[in-house]
Length: 483
Image (cartoon, rainbow, N blue to C red; front, side, top):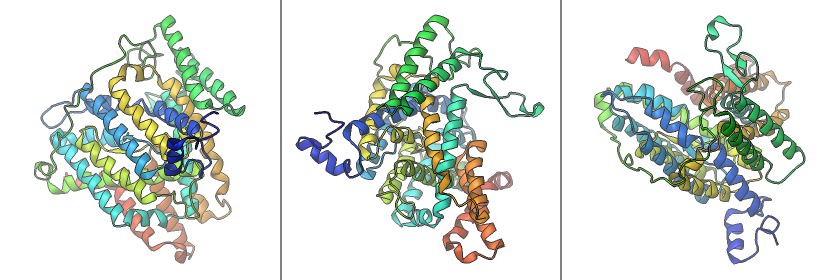
């Protein structure tokens, strides 16, 4: 009898089924394992990309972080925290070093102090969020946001995922001289799909879509793996190399069989942080502004991601809350501090987790699978590099479509919710930021409700959230004034 059809056969399986509520959530062990594997492959790029981003920055002394140690630390923290999410949060949500936050740490915070000081601020930010969770404030803020606006957050993240996939696959390119053109992005290179990597992505996407429409089990995972095989063959014949070397190459990972499979992880950066020195080095106001920026970004990014994944998994209650939301948020806040403690930047919940949900994952068992694969990746980093963006991005496009389907739940006839929802949905992909979309939606919602005399419909906490987002959007002038 297959595991996929009987998740509860055997004593161990029954125990897992009860603990993770697999049958209760309408899933099976087979789906959870497949979902966890898909999420890992969709996120595996972070083991390569996070070190490249952090190593690109330098602190006030000119020091740079070693790439090998960053890769090992990135995989280690992602693995441990994702397993913790699976066991404590029991939710199909994976965590890793946050994109955007890592660039903030590398190019804005570190130059003002040492790397140890910068990572110390990340630890402080994570601990502050943990306090907000334990006091109930973070959950209260989550509940204060209107349900339809939460739905819009999920839809916006779906579009955000799609644009991430299209850009990572090279199907869409940024125009270098966008200021002198009518559009900031273009199709392929020069408006045409002429590169082999883009061809591989298109073929892989079509394969995935056909499998998905025909309801083939494991469609997304099969799509990623089959596209990777095609990519390896193409690279072996054409010898394209990475796009950073020449146009028309692969976005990040070059899909060639590695010379070696196992590598010894370098964990020398773990514990290299300083909590207090930055406040005297850069000054308390500057340090406070950096912590505030980190906190707001992590705080609302996770809220949006949790809603989107829960919405896709059909796990939200009437208030738009997923089960065990306090535990989910607490693990996320601990992950932020753990990322700083390991010198790999704040770790946060990844919206790419929705790709595993699209494959059938509904419980924390999928997160445990993803986390174990991240730990394995510390030793098998050469194999992780085999899967190119062009293969993993096929999953993001399919999941983006799935998340887009909930847009019909928004009341588009009520402009006081429709306009904030519209801004939330559109600004996420257009500004490449979940927080920007949430902030614009919340501010607009409060303003329009007040302007139409419907202030009683605004939860009191929404005023405080709006004020925080006003400060968040005004942080550029504020930082300039402080500096």
